[in-house]
Image 1 (tube, rainbow, N blue to C red):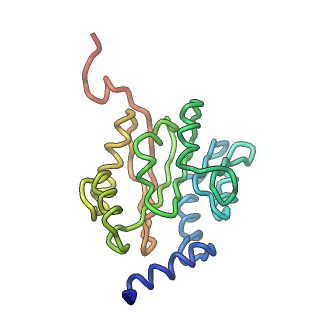
Image 2 (cartoon, rainbow, N blue to C red):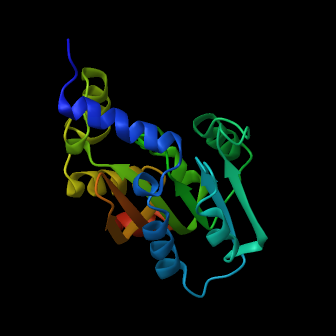
Image 3 (spheres, one colour):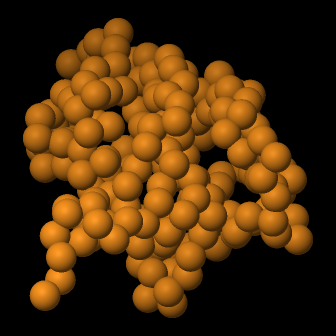
Length: 203
């Protein structure tokens, strides 16, 4: 059976991603967002998951403590980001900035990624579901995380906020940059006391 136009276009995008083409990774727009959000911040502890070819690492180094950024990615031979973040949680690591820039949906990080941050910023790259060819497995995956197989941006943001609250983190949306096939979401994350957040006193 011949491939549809959308399937062929999807293959082209995948090939460009493999070769780190700017038009699919959007480093310029991502860097502009980072610089807008972090501005005069310095000496931050920063971790990048799916660091890839390091498009953003040099930018993060300007804000990082001792110019050091932890970068994890299979291509860098530093490990599987999905497995490593659980190890970092076990080690009780904490970061001021977390960057999630996977090659697909970042849903598998939710909600536990919030255990790695108590007061800081999180940048998340999220593919737009409706511009992708969603097979049955992906549709079920999105339904499990967001309650529907083709969630809107508002639904995604609301669910991320709920996932943050699973570990008593309040997440405020600071910016959403439209990257064509993707959204780049910037969050301010702060740990909150359960008693204060819910207005309940411990007895």
